[in-house]
Amino acid sequence: MKFAIIIYGPPGSGKGTQAEKIAEKFNLIHFDTGKMIEKTVHDPKNANDPIVQREKKLFDSGILCTPSWVLSLVVENIKKICDKDTGLVFSGSPRTMYEAEGDKKENIPGVIETLEDCYGKENLVFLRLNVSRETAIYRNTHRRVCESCRFILQYSPENEKLDKCPQCGGKLVRRSLDTSEVMSVRLEEYKHRTKPIFDFVEARGYELVDINGEDEPEAVSAEIFGKLSGFLSF
Image (spheres, one colour):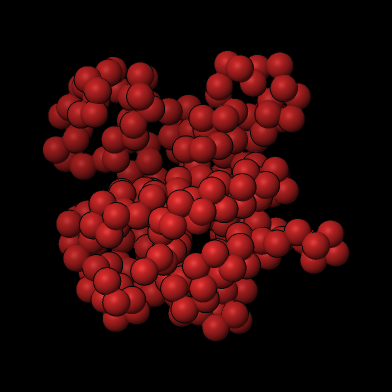
């Protein structure tokens, strides 16, 4: 059975970490919109593309990228994954009401409608990871990324001791996004532009399954797997 899982939560709540664990356990594709956008805007091939450079300025400042631009990228990739007869797990997307709902006047479907068409409404699950503002800022300002493969090493006491990427051995560095100033902007963006999607999702008949994101990753995963078993037959 194909299904899609959408994970919400503020920056630093562990969406990417848990999406990877879910994808591995249930043989899904992890659709990381943030990584897709970061790769696109920082690709040297796009250095002379005015639209991409416009989005790069937004992305690097912590402001969400233009919803119509993001939506076109995401929908295109959802359809490709669906055509492969594979399920997926989203980490933090759609991020704005436009991405979620689309544009009815222009007959442009949003991410939620696209997922419903591809996977069936009964096969969509929405999770929400809850962490405090203090936890979100601390985690993001202490995580690092590999210069070579762009793997993001989430913060943990064990990971703090590493100086090389566990994936490829590359050098670990801080991202320009991961400062307290940019994090404050990102948290405000989440509050004012992403949270309104929750009412939209619930109005379509879905339940947002709340998860305690403050726990250690393994404990969070255990809670997620336990709650998923009540929604889908794996």
